[in-house]
Length: 297
Ligand SMILES: Nc1ncnc2c1ncn2[C@@H]1O[C@H](COP(=O)(O)OP(=O)(O)O)[C@@H](O)[C@H]1O
Ligand SMILES: [Mg+2]
Image 1 (cartoon, rainbow, N blue to C red):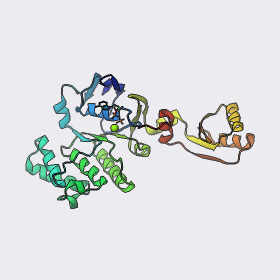
Image 2: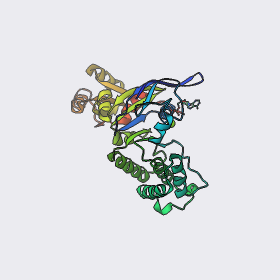
Image 3: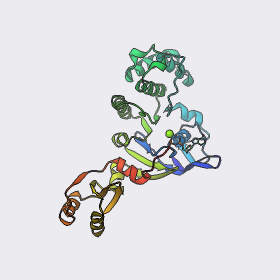
Image 4: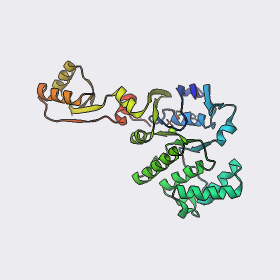
């Protein structure tokens, strides 16, 4: 779908030659810290921001020449909530349907169906600025579905939501996927990506660092388990002798391994350690390992 895709803002390269293919019917994630280039990449796919260079095809059509056709088959949940505050929940959806030339009677039917789907029927006559964060996000999801898109693009769909609202959003997205909708999302909730995405890429500084299924990425870059213990010089010497892969974080040391029992036994017998914990590796470990622990913006 995209090959060597680039986006510059003046001298600044926001997306620096990314290539990816999104398969029909899959859930595909863009992960990365703030400023990685996720939104910029999505906006090019959504035909709302022209690419600087590279190849970009959506539904097999060139994104720079077929914007109209592409947009009619696509639904977009942007990073910022951009509902119209002068309209009610119902009117927001109905007004939006006019961009797609949906006949009014069909549109009304579709709006009712979608309000039911996102559990906002009771709020249909409410002005949007009084909605909670979770309700706003769900309304925008409903709005993105008005044209029955084949491809749904979601930029941080669950940012700032409480766990209940987040899980409800996940359920809705899983339901849509079951119906065959292709879903692309960005997130920096790693658990979200691990739960939802069939495949994902981790981006930083405008580049793709890794690509694969969550499990693949975890196994390939860290191993299955992390053994943690206090970092003191003796332990480090012991680990080096063992040629273990580890990272020192503050006063703890994390050892990456596929054989946690072996490492744990070794540390206990050879290094006189008493407090050791072992746990499964999460996508968050990979993310921090790849993108570093420095704070962003
Ligand atoms: N319109 C713009 N003009 C100039 N710089 C921009 C613009 N949009 C984004 N950027 C810059 O491009 C980089 C990537 O931004 P963005 O794609 O929004 O990152 P992400 O969504 O991963 O947080 C950031 O450094 C951001 O400041
Ligand atoms: Mg963004």
